[in-house]
Image 1 (cartoon, rainbow, N blue to C red):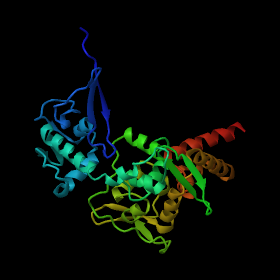
Image 2 (image 1 turned 180 degrees about the horizontal axis):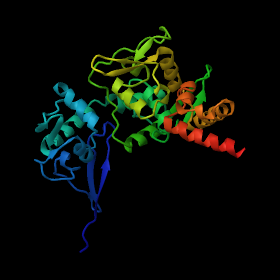
Image 3 (image 1 turned 60 degrees about the vertical axis):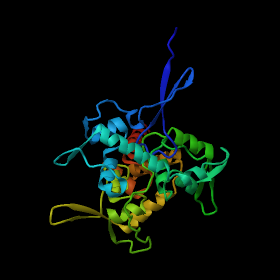
Image 4 (image 1 turned 180 degrees about the vertical axis):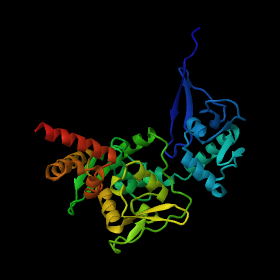
Length: 334
């Protein structure tokens, strides 16, 4: 008798924040019951007493080290268990300690998905506005969604409908089915839920344009949940417009803090809210790069930072570098 072939697939629920994929088993004879605890279904090891550090937890359970640090920092509200072993700043948990917690945490997140569920209830051809899509994804504002379209081409689907408004802005809409399908196969864990910390209010945009803002003040204006997240985006080249601060303050302990003029932050925030398609952005970058190279007394002075600062919201450092290289090649061929 030929043995049944059993296949296993990983699925993410709509409310999943990527902490733990749900393992569903099925066979040619139909689904079979699972009795193994859900937190053990993604384990790469079987020893419940094995100690795992942040990297090993990420590899096995899909939880990023930064998110683990946040859960531990807010353990009074998240319920994150104390490490089973601590060596200096290194924390390690037993597999049997961290696994059940992550399962319980994911279940708690799923129970808070009433807004997402209500918005996703309807015909698949129902159009959803940008703000509705943002709510479905767990974001209070649309900046994150628009940032995906600008900074991560191909990560989130392009709008199914895009039409200009009377004021010249672009109104984007997605079919419910498009959003639901993307959630069902969402790449990467994501982190769509708000942090437990209270976010500082965004400074008024109509203040002194020359006033210097630190990254804690600039972060909410640009749609980032914290100054750490903003600093990471700048360091990774996602925001080359801010690669060069207007001022740098150094504390008595030698720590530095970048400062940016309000007008630069406001201009970038507006640009990120009015994002064209990726192909349009590419054309604009190329036009800017070609013009700058042709008119510059020293073509070598045309850098990523210079172009990004004069054209905020037009792409990452990687995108600008590729465009500048292509523009140089085009001019040399002429």
